[in-house]
Image 1 (cartoon, one colour):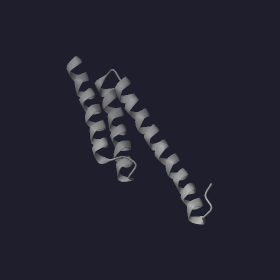
Image 2 (cartoon, one colour):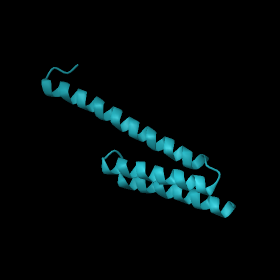
Image 3 (cartoon, one colour):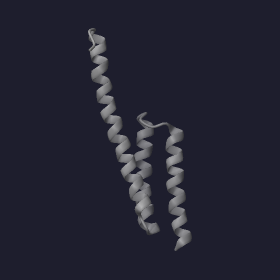
Length: 87
């Protein structure tokens, strides 16, 4: 266990950040699953819009790297566009 005040504070702040990051990443995964489970393009398009918004917010707050976010958005967009080809 930590003995110095600064080390104790670091433990507290690390735990807060860990929980915040975990919540954000969980929300991103949920939104992505919604997009990927949609069968109609219109429905998937609406879910895509919210997913992209959540991903961009995570990047702006430093919880996700911009390239990681770009890759996630590209994959989701590619899936939604593939639904148009099926219909």
